[in-house]
Amino acid sequence: MEIQLKTAEDIAKMRVAGRLAAEVLDMIGEHIKPGVTTNQLNQICHDFIVNQQGAIPAPLNYGTPPFPKSICTSVNHQICHGIPSEKVLKKGDALNIDITVIKDGYHGDTSKMFHVGKATVPAQRLADITQKCMYLGIQQVRPGATLGDIGHAIQVFAEKNHYSVVREFCGHGIGTVFHEPPQVVHYGKPGAGEVLQEGMIFTIEPMINQGKRHIKILPDQWTAVTKDHKLSAQWEHTVLVTADGFDILTLRAEEAGWQERI
Ligand code: MF3
Ligand code: CO
Ligand code: CO
Image 1 (cartoon, rainbow, N blue to C red):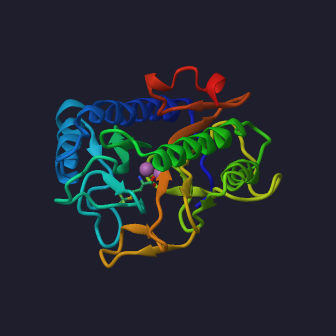
Image 2 (tube, rainbow, N blue to C red):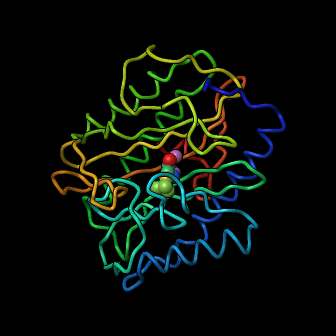
């Protein structure tokens, strides 16, 4: 499968799907507190997506083996694809919630870090630097830039802060298909890789580890964790390549003015 350039009609539908995914993250924040289980967060998101948004939670039954829940909840040393469970969240836990909705056949995919109660200092620092990695990657996006430019910007900032970049998972093209070409890796060399063109839509979703980059997959065949059990963080946006730069299709109101803050 080749990289699809989206039509104006595709882009209009991707904007809707992206906005809905962002709204789920806005909605769930107030429910994250000590004592809540990740299953409860999954149920609240599922019901909101299905009943309020008239959309479909893309993770449910996705892949092999079928992902069993509607969202991903990755806590502390879990890197990504954490499966909601009866696990009770406690003060100081850091978690990524990753939302993908399908609306009118199109996918919107976005994730953010949350902290239960007050964030610990190391978890806050890792989350902040990982978010900045994502933003620095996004700022590289324009026609003529390359995927390597994105990966390089992310890798340099992560490693300058003595963190490591997960290699086994990457961003991805997205549209009517959840994961389509290109693969957007979060490391690389300037000028390397595919040249970006107006109309491409892909995610940028760096996973940054506090310790070493190495991962392990749990026996559930989905949950990725750090091999050294140190913390990991991730943020994700769905991004459109425009004529002169980028447009973030999953931007939340709370992010307004991000370019002046990073
Ligand atoms: N939302 C994830 C991503 O960013 C993929 C989750 S697949 C699932 O690509 F099956 F684990 F939900
Ligand atoms: Co994604
Ligand atoms: Co995602």
